Length: 466
Figure 1: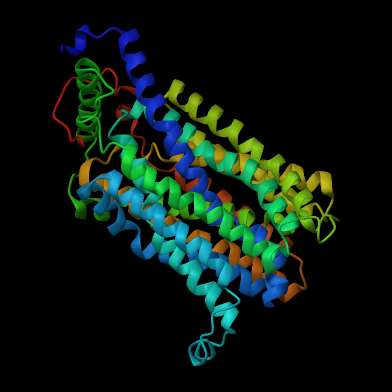
Figure 2 (figure 1 turned 90 degrees about the vertical axis):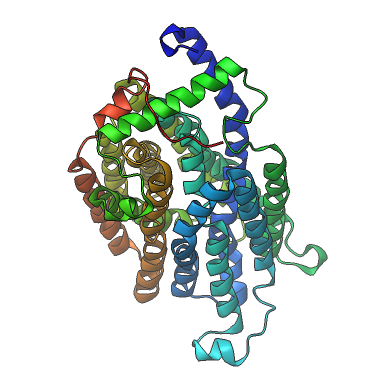
């Protein structure tokens, strides 16, 4: 097939077909992934009292997920590239679903002298171990999906696809918040289990089921699929090859070690670290922040319903920011502006003094700003990395950056414990982190070629996946 003979209508229809087959299923996968990662924020409202966790214990346990995530992220993504997305993503989802459900036994496991040696109760040590193992199990899922999308979409189309995929975060929280609240409120006491135990059990099972479906239905790449015609298949692979060639022109390094030697990769890891600090600090503590606006301690459903407000904003922000970034070809200011919106929201939250309207408005700015940042951010590393370097580089950025997911929740927990529940100092600190992220990202070199001209670049040899 001659690429010059391809009509815009045929090309548009082809990539629309690809998106319609892949994005809805990946979207569903990410919904259950994110629920299993963050439902601990709702469980905390009841579990902390039952297991006698202080704010510092909860903050550390919530964040330690990202230590396991960090250690296993890069090797997980490289394995995915070697053995294929279908097998590895299925493995990830099944193991994390099992571990997530195991949290229901956090108060039952007896560690004896092992827990004592770490200065913990049995319940605290179980909580820490399970959160760490959940991070190990999930390591590789998100960057693996980002890598997987590079097999199907050239750079100029990818931000919108990432946006559609990542709106699952907003949907997971919009749907999951009231569902989590309802489970805790109405299942409490059923079969002798507390509401938080039912929460972990019922929200872990879907991950196992969908993980089995991944093994059956997810293709490893465009070459072997039967739902694309030969001309459609050739077009998709050719556009991906052209995109990879354009990255070579920008100075891409295709080796595994090349990603670790590229200063841009480490700068982007620092940016993503800032984003993870601010996002997960607020995400893991949002149910507590909302409950403390004057809601009855047992009205978990109301907490969930109110939580829907800021999370709904992420869906709108992701679609708008991603689409606008694709239309303009601009990535840096789009990502940085998300940080700046977060900065404003965090300052307002610190000054809100538990005012319900002002606090919810501030939380909405924080979540919307994060959505705008993250949905355009992932177009930056994939603009200059390909092949094994892309697998290693994306995983490196995600794993190092996600260490911020440890520091953010832990910081709020320690400050709240030290101040008797006040968190204003933490919110001002988070605002400074958001501002730092914006400054770093605006000083990065631009990779305009791959973002702006991928569709028009000359045919060339690139790396594709089967």
